[in-house]
Amino acid sequence: MNVLRAVLWKDLLIEWRSRERSVAMLVFALLVVVILYLAAPPADTPEARAALPGMLWVAYIFAAVLGLNRAFALELDEDALTGLALAPADRGFIFLGKTLASFVLLLGVQAVTALAFGLAFGVNFAPVALPFAGVAALGALGICVVGTFCSAMAIRTRYREAMLPLLMLPLLLPILLGAVRATDALLNGEALPGLALQLLLVSDGVFTIVCYLGFDAVLDE
Amino acid sequence: MSSADNARASQAATPALSLRARGISRRFGARVALHPLDMELSAGGALAVLGPNGAGKSTLLRLLAGLMRPTSGVIEIGDGGGLNRVARRAAIGLVGHESFNYRALTLRENLELAARLHGLADVRARAGQSLAKLGLAGFAERRVADLSHGLQRRLAIARALLHEPRLLLLDEPTSGLDPRAAARLGEHLRERATTTGAACVLVTHDLNFAAALSQQALVLVRGHACALPEAALADAATLAQACSAAVARLEAAA
Image (cartoon, rainbow over all chains, first blue to last red):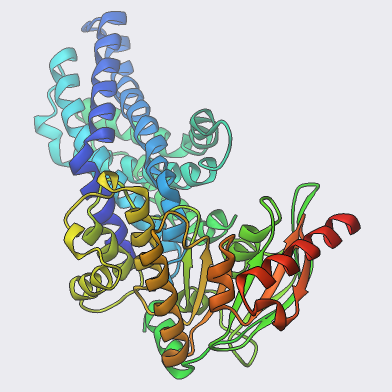
């Protein structure tokens, strides 16, 4: 747990000083919302409303890819990744620390993006704020778990910026499916669908365990 | 008990540490970076690894550090079958080509991070002591990005020594250091070898430093190794001659 806390503290402190990832993620997510607004202006038709959850998660996932691409890039300067790999502890804790740091950043970006999305498309999140926050957090957790693992795999490859989405997006399908279905139900005033919630929980759990266990091999050169 | 606690407990139980490598080799695809190699280093000993650029010296250090797995062969660090991977990382201090530090953090923050990663108690005091030992106390609150190369190098050494490792793996430790700092480092390593039995594998082109510190020497050329006789370490000039002859022999054979 020392290692998890140390890595989390380090990543958040560096981000607090540079604001490099959070600003880039936020600007990108807001830009996606603006582009979606221009491409498909809000209309009070069932088809237009059905597309909203998917559009929101498109903004989230694009912002996440941008941020996660940088998650391990900062470890390349001065070969800091080797310093982490030399920690005498289960390397899975390094993975968890980095995942949690990205998760915190993505949660912040999600909150601001949801506000902007609500204003742009006339969506009132207030009545479903709590369950929506839960769904967004479960989705963000899955995205960060898979993204951190894939980012670590891609970081030593030549085309790392292109590799991350190629590795990550196919694996995220169950998480995105669950998150979009759950968001759709909430925005339509329905109860959270059990199947979507189960899909999110199971995907998060399975990916967390597999990535935690596999991270030691990923750090080996 | 956490894995770091286990590692520290194991370190306390066996204060000195020996190193044995049997037939270790490493390939990167079709390229052989290191041909099968045997080496042995007892507690308190120092082994200099010499040779031209691209000979496989840094690969050897990274294999010994457990950062990469050998394609063949076995590395044992510690007696009785050797330490496991986690305990080995607790016992090792590595100085690499780069500093392993974060440019956005201050020197103190970097060392505190390293202390936390090693599960040390009283991280602030440990970081302060380590900075003072390397003459960096006056720079403690400066960010690494604002430091000269030489000071960054000293910080890298401070980081490697922070947890009092029993096996030091040093890749060009004097590169960028002024002569006084290099001499202080040599004294410190000798003192550690005497008082704690810490062993040292030293990759260097600084033959004065190698001759002053080491009892054994190994020359690597294109991944092929050749041990030098103990007499070659009498002084830098003798070492230079022996090293040149070994390089010529290995190049002819390769």
